[in-house]
Image (cartoon, rainbow, N blue to C red; front, side, top):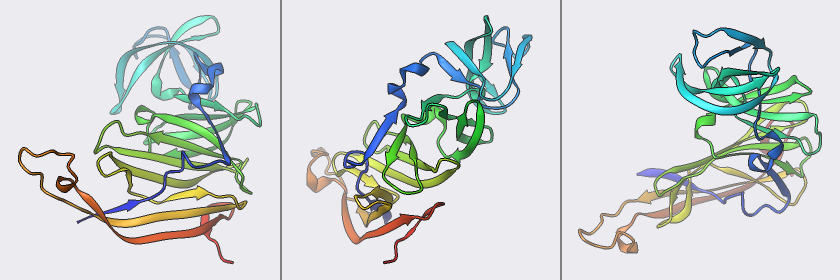
Length: 270
């Protein structure tokens, strides 16, 4: 038997969350920032070309275009053509931020999402070019669909930074990973995953989700544990006939209140 978890989706039901995604941030169209220290900007898209500049973390670059692919230490990326100090340069994509969001409440703070060296990805928070905090993600900038900052009415959390990957067809996994920004440091918040199958339900959740609720500072942990029951398709039969498709048999429903203690979600005790 395959153990599955069904949980409520948070993206459509939250009235007290204000989201800002990268598509709305037109100010960063054609802009990027150096994502690590001492990055070489080259004269041509080749490791054998001369180095025009070596620039520090958080240097702003004007991105012109994307070039051919380049694999370094087993990591697949591509050359980016950028403009810096009135010169056209080339830089490897893993060394610059993939997505940038500005904090709507503090214009000096930027949230950068990019590659994380040995890890799939990282989120970094910078203020006026200075690194405030960073955290590793399980998502790579190569396989995400959305990166957004959400305001949550919760003490101790200024923003939830959410990376999402959406399923495009039945059987694929849709996931999101969230991190809490408290104004000083990034903390892991929650992970949500789902198998998309329109014949069963919109989503069959694989992991629990935490839903902000009206009561300030509270989150609701929701999960419905079940088993996927396989049924054989009748030869030549309609694959969308309910008699021929898998179904979920629910065994346990869990719903409890959680509270943010400044570092992580914990059980709420009256």
